[in-house]
Image 1 (cartoon, one colour):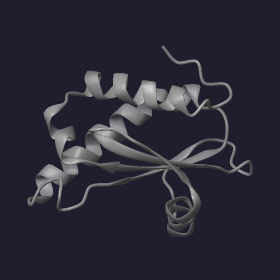
Image 2: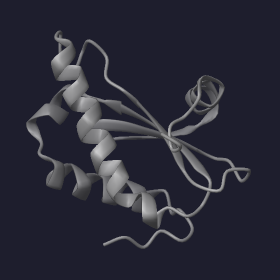
Image 3: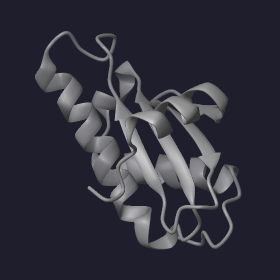
Image 4: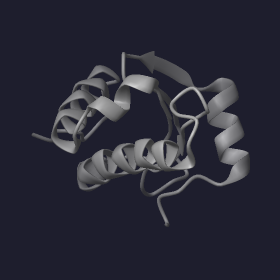
Length: 114
């Protein structure tokens, strides 16, 4: 829970962060050098699924994939992940691979996960 975004940070990342899009999710990010560790928020709208169970599954998948890279993300960066409909077709391993590619694209200092 210490890695979750609070409301003001969520809004700041949403309004002023940079975005990277792919078929499965949108990753918004913003550097915050005041943070000792990265923080993240996760969104799954009704477009992902009409039922709450589908939306919760999408957020769980994203949260788990992000958690895998937390030890490697040493710098203070805030993330917001927005799930897309296709994310429900993936398993955690595939999503981790995709997230790794996206995290490498933004060139986070100290990020060298496998």
